[in-house]
Image 1 (tube, rainbow, N blue to C red):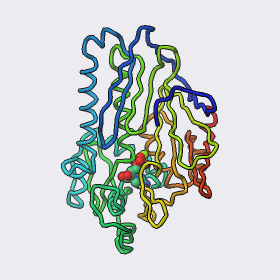
Image 2 (image 1 turned 120 degrees about the vertical axis):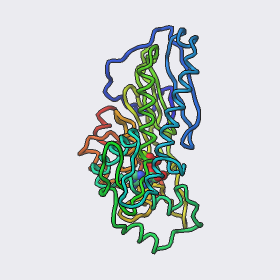
Image 3 (image 1 turned 30 degrees about the vertical axis):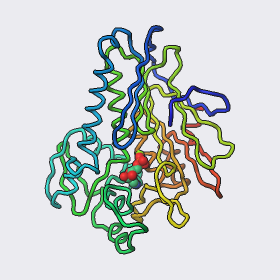
Image 4 (image 1 turned 135 degrees about the vertical axis):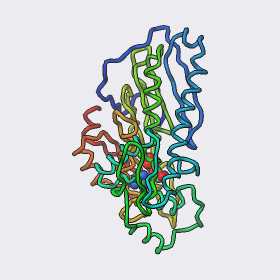
Length: 342
Ligand code: AMP
Ligand code: MG
């Protein structure tokens, strides 16, 4: 997903727009970029000459970096010292004190797990690692059947996590993974930080293809964001979204995954099988007010597959665009909630 100049031959998505603060004609654009969570981040803001001269760039860089570091320190499955790894390695049945930000993400994750009936599952780290999509180095080829069965038939799952504001008891065998929601949460945090900053009237935040925008540009136009085009896409319109107070996230195997015997395996796992999802829905793009929700729901829609995803999106009024593989080509479907914004 990238910032777009806007164009013709295009599906234009304009979500409900809030009352928008508009930068002064003399506003200047400041762009900062860096790396976090093994991906790129980028923010663009409109601000005043005065704030710029007073060292806004330096201030923001420090604050952005410390927010991203906090998320990583608390929730990275790749850092053995993270709070998440500490929880996953704790003795079964013991209470593990956990920081407030992580517990807020866990709260959201459990709510989405409930809403999606476990399609989004924050306790799949063992399955993720078994398939080679985590920190653990695994041998080439498929995991042994016995191991898949053992992970699939585990006694406890996310339903056994009892949320408390300051930590949780670790159920036997449960290892949590917040990778499908934490990036979105980090985007929300950055957007909120920037929108509260004096002298910043509009901003667009991106971490690894997940974006959130607020305010409008000095010409009165919204931030335009384009959904990346798909491999094998034939006669597909471009999709450009106006992001002012909304976020957009995409999940799917277009970016990550691997081929095995000619079958593309997704890095998204179906908890019912402990195996990668069959590649029916190649990508799911969700637009929501919250980036954490868009992020988590996009992952869930991939697990659900086309029919269940569309029924769920209709029922829960989720604005989404699915790309579905069909005999070697790709087709797109939009949910009614997204259709209403076209
Ligand atoms: P995303 O790119 O947001 O769809 O997140 C994918 C990542 O989330 C994977 O690399 C796993 O770490 C984790 N994951 C895989 N399957 C699931 C699932 N069904 N529910 C929640 N997280 C998952
Ligand atoms: Mg996600």
